[in-house]
Length: 256
Image (cartoon, rainbow, N blue to C red):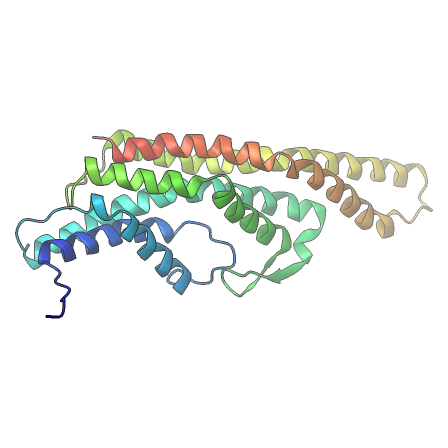
């Protein structure tokens, strides 16, 4: 007799609910070179993580009604999206910082193709997004996210998730911290470029014959490259510090 693969309704529902919870986080997770929110890479990664969590799949005793299953889907999506936001906020803080000092340094005029959207975007913003995506895997954050999913399946069975006020406040605080971190990253370069502008203005005031406009732009770009090389050394500790706050919000989401 040939062996037949038989999937029970309970197993199928557990797979679907876990996939919905896992898929919510990868909508916002920065993945280098992945285009679109539902790209094959994101779908394959969501399926792989879901299969790795097979021992933690929820056990659904009875077949739910359509309305109850829709409520379960909303609950699982809310938890997955909440975890995804805690991961994405620190990546967006790097993009905010690059946007701020990109305009001051003159790199706002330089554009390239964003691999995530296939549209023209600032070169520093694309660099920040790719760096955040690489750091996500290089620092092992993906393993922490998978572990958080396993713990969330233990603490919050299928359809039982309820967003608590304290957890929601921590996620909102991460959104505010995103702008604060981006500004802190950009302020050193903005301050140096402001000093360069003041110095060139004073030189132009002293000697009106100097053609400072023609040299101001390349000077600012060269200084910006030097400062960016120094700031690149701070990306790793800055990313880890931001993720520590993200993990605190993530633990608040999955704890009861």
